[in-house]
Length: 360
Image 1 (spheres, rainbow, N blue to C red):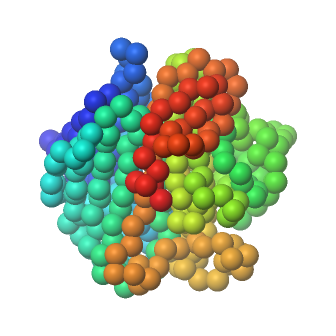
Image 2: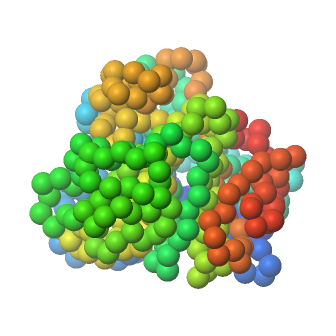
């Protein structure tokens, strides 16, 4: 039995899967329609028939959906937690769900500690704001960790992407599924490009701002943020659905954006070739998908002064904040985003209220 907690404000609702700390659903209501562009694995609600889920499968894959917070991001090769860490695999409990001025706020606590820290998840919804404001609060940690949000979009009908300024895009030394039978990728590994619209692949240069780039592939690429930008952002326009998803983050805290292009490239369980049309936009502080040890040691990014881990020893309380949301849109070209006077404004003229103090 899945245990869920739903938080609501006027025009928006967010539901947490307490068993895994995952965003089960986020629905923005505008113009008498529900906007819900997030992806959920197709087996999330299927019974376990004894073949799809192996004993070694990390719990987060069982009901992977919408967004979850990773600490550490990908591999914990220090403490041996499941992939993406206990925040994405462990049980959370509700601490409070209270009204606030013009909205509602809920606080949850992770039952397990992470690197010695107690972890709280704070969700804030404000009336008529199309965003879920998230804060992950670490108290009393004793180590540095790579961290990331793992947001997933349903782009089975295609998508057009735009990002705040990035320095470059790069793939790791090898595909994340290297050596796995039934794994297929199309990008070159390693490869690097300063132009997101022209990235090297086995099928020629591909445009990372258009989804899909190919059929039957799973690929991973890291975008490195321009550190002169205060608030980084990503938008994913879904022309066929007439909506746009948005992510906003503080670049100083999360200086990379990881793209996970998952379009039927894994034929092994639990994927079975069924996970198609999904784009992960994962706002991160990590040395790609290399894991905890590589991200907390000197690496090519830290040599350039770009952080790849968040040190929980830097303060008694360390907070990681983001906002994710959606709006209707009839645009047909990628949408840029700017923030002005407590509003987000998209390049098609659409605007909405935005609480910048909940992100910075």
